Structure formats: structure tokens, C-alpha cells
Amino acid sequence: MKNTTIVILLAIVFSSACTTTTGPATGEGAQSAISSRSPISEEQHKAKVHVELGSLYLIDGRPSVALEEARIALSADPSYAPAYNLLGLTHMTMGEPKLAEENFDKAMRNAPGDPEIQNNFGWFLCQNGREKRAIEFFTAAARNPLYATPGKPLTNAGMCAVRIKDDKAAEDFLLRALRLNPGNTQALYWLADIAYRQGRHLEARQWVSDIEKTMEPSAEVIWLALRVERKLGNREIEARHASQLRRRFATSPEARLLSQGQYP
View 1 (spheres, one colour):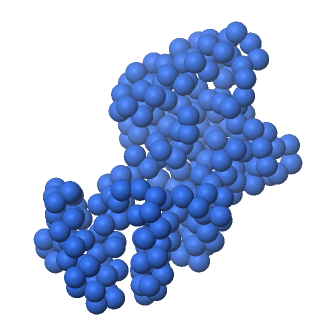
View 2: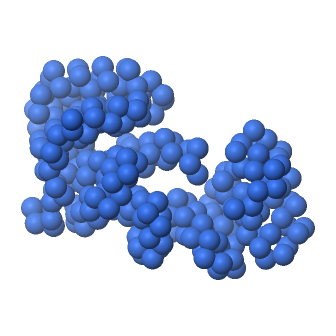
View 3: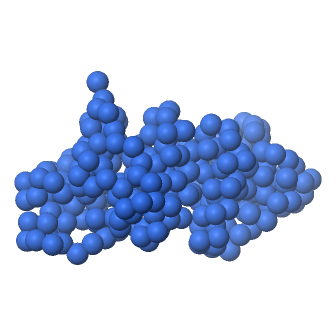
């Protein structure tokens, strides 16, 4: 799933010299995400509107417009943490990690303990080789009793644990996320991936089957399903997956691996 990192990032974080960064808050003094609260002033209302617009522009692949919307939001309310959060995400997608971290830092200083910002900063850390620190922020966000979507940071923590080859921790996070939302296809995929890599092929097949009940399978899912069936010796089903991969995703990296006979 490496070729869909940015899509995954945006789907997860929008459900709607570097600085020293504030650490993740404990469960004491927990607060809900500012972005989910009603504005308390006209200035904050204006800032919220522009952050929401900027988020949509970022998802649409227009980061320069997202930056402008975040700046307009801050001109209305210079302490509005979600605007700094949006700047952090936008600079991250633009490949500007120093600016991203600076803005995440400002977001957390203006809203310490905000679980949405903790989740997003955790993803930034995970993508920049600081996985253990990232997991601290994910778990802090997930612990917050006022956070409406704790499955997001739990899923992210699982994916981050996979990156450092801590499959045991990854499975724990992903299973917790799945208990909160049985249709969480990201959690299902990574549980299938772990099971496959550990030789638990029947279990991997079941996780893949659960994904296929929830969504039209992507190239990554089909490729994993193909390899599972190959390990189980089901050549007919393997061939069916191969045909589907070539037909629907002919230019994908997975189709290229198939044509080269590479089955990791």
C-alpha cells in the first residue's frame, strides 16, 4: 500500500532546525477536538470556515490553495489551532517537513491535548522515521474519552508499528481499532498482511474476505489475496485474482510484480 500513502493519510486525518514539540497529554484534562466544537466567537467561526475549505482543497490535491485558506483563518483568529494543523498537513504533503513540524508544534501549543492534532502529528512523525514517538501520540489520542473517532489513531499506531517490524504491537492496535469499527478496511488489510507474512495463510484469507465484503478490492488487496491463495496451493483462485489484477489495474506496481513473477 505504499503507493497510496497520501490518500490513506487524507482519508484518515480528515473525517471532516525543527522546534521542540509539546509531548502527548495524559488522560487528565482531556478535551475534544477543537475542529469538532461550535465556534465561540465571530472570529473563530470565520477561521473554522476557512480551515474546512482548506481541508477540502488539500484533499482535492490543491495544497497552495489550502495554504492560503489556512492563512486567512489565522488572520481572523491567530490562535486557532486547527489552522496550524492544516498548515502542518499541507506542508507535509508538499514534502516540507521542517515547516510541517513547526506548524504542528504551534497547533499543539494552542490546543494541548487536542486528539485530532495529536493523531495528525503522530502520522507526520511516523512518516519521518520517528515511529516510536509517533505511537505515543497515537495512543494519547486514542485514550482521550472525548475523541469521537479513537479507531483512527489506533489504526495509525498499528500501521506505524508494522513499519518498525513490531507485529505483536501492530496486531494489538489493529484489533482494538477493529473492535470499534468492524468495517475498518485499513485495519483488516494490515491484519491480513501480518498473518500472511507470519505464515498464517488461512487467517490471512479470512481477513481478505472480510475486506471484500466491505469494499471493491484495490490492487493491493487483490495482490495480497493472490499471494495468499498461491501459498495455499489454490491455483484456480490464484489465476482468477491474477486476471482481475491485470484487467483492472494493468499499470499498477502490483501488476508489474505479477508480470515479473515476484511474489514477496
